[in-house]
Image (cartoon, rainbow, N blue to C red; front, side, top):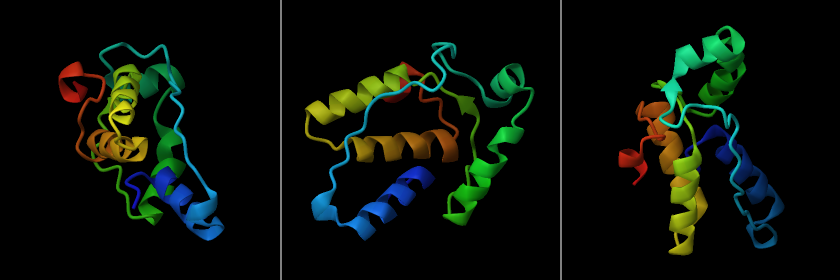
Length: 121
């Protein structure tokens, strides 16, 4: 069961296609590599980059349709440390999906800054 709306959509597609025929491998990708290493305040980042956070309306709507609130999205993260954590966990037998779900929950629902090495370290 995925914790992120994108993951829930992926899980539904895999279930429809057949879990015996699909293998998911997560590849690190930093959406905004220019984000401050310590992360940035969500609204300040969006105002600086796009003039506001209006672009998140469709994302939030889709999340609500799937039962995800985006209830405490306070940070725009620099995801480098999170990617390192995922890589570390995978090397020790923990599937990336489990780690990603925990990171998404922390970021979007708990308001935790996943850029902070104390959080992901």
